[in-house]
Image 1: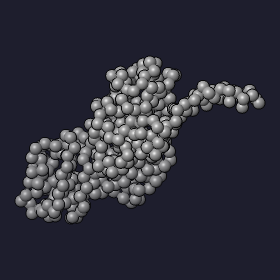
Image 2 (image 1 turned 180 degrees about the horizontal axis):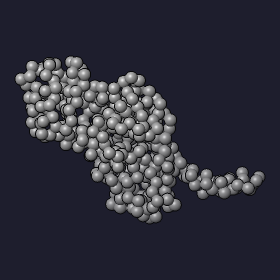
Image 3 (image 1 turned 180 degrees about the vertical axis):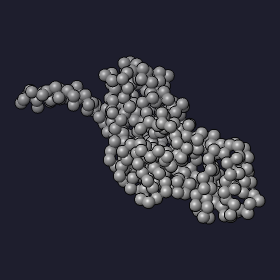
Length: 388
C-alpha cells in the first residue's frame, strides 16, 4: 500500500485516481511515498526518507527544492500542457484588452456613476480616448514553443496575425502541433526586430531570467506590447518601467505582479489567473496523480523535471529501478551486480538527464535481495527500488 500526502486542496478528479485499498491519502501523512502539491512551498519542508516522488499539479516547480530532491533520489513531476488551454485563452484575451484599452476604459466608465441619463451621452463623447488597434495584420513574436506557446501561436494566426516563433529547444511533439504557417525565427533578435506583440512562454531558469532587460528592450521594435504569463522574473521590472516611460514599450501585461510595477502607466497587472479555471485544475490534478501512480506502481517516469522520461513494458514479475549519478561505467556495474547469482536480466533500459540517470531492470531469479544490496553498495547509486 502506498501513502500519498496532499499539500494543497486537490481536485476530486485527481484524488479519485488513487484506488482505495492500494493508497492512503491525507494531508498529515508523516511517511509518504508520494506528495501531491499545487502552490505550497516545500523549500522549508523536511523530505522524509520514505518519499520517492513529488508531483506538482501545474507547470512551474519553483516551489519545490528540485536540486535537493535529485540528490536524494526523489523524482519531481510537473503537468506540462494540462493548463495550456486556460493560459492560452487568457493570453489571447490580454492581446485584445491591451489593444482596446478595455481595463482603462472600464475604470473610466465607473467614474460616471451618478450621472443618470447623461451616462449614455458621456460615454459616446469620451470613448474616443480609448481607441486602439485590431490584432489582424499585426506581427506576434512567441518566445517558447511548448504546449502554451504553440496554442498561442496557432490561435493568433487564426485571428489574422503574422506569427514568428522562437524556441531552440522545441520538442518533436510541439513541432508536430504547430501550424506550418508559423514562421521560424532563427534568433531572439529576429523576434525583437519584427514583432508588434511579444508573448513569452518559457520556464524560469538561469538562462531565461531577465530576458526582458535594458539591452533586449533597446533591440525591440518601438511601441511593442509585451505579454508575460510565464514568470515575473523573466523581465527586469526597472527596465520594463524605463521602457514604458520612454515609449519603447507601449504596454506590459503580466500575470505575476510586483510592487515596483503597480500603478505604472502602461502596466496591466493580472493576479496570476493563467490556470485559474476549474477545467485546468481538474486536468492538472488528474495528470499529476497518474504520474505518481505510474511511477510508484511501475517505475515509469514521464514529465519529470529532474530525471529522464523512462518507460519499459513489463517482461517479468520483478522490476528493479535504480536512480544514480550520470557517470562512466555505471550501467556496467549495475549489470554486474546480477552476475553469479542465478539472476537473469530479462529486459533493461537506462537513460540520463544532465547529472542524473535512471535504470529499469526486469529480472528473474531467486537472489534478488542479494543483488539489491550489491547495487546499493555501488558508488554513485542513490536509490534502489524493487517493484513486484
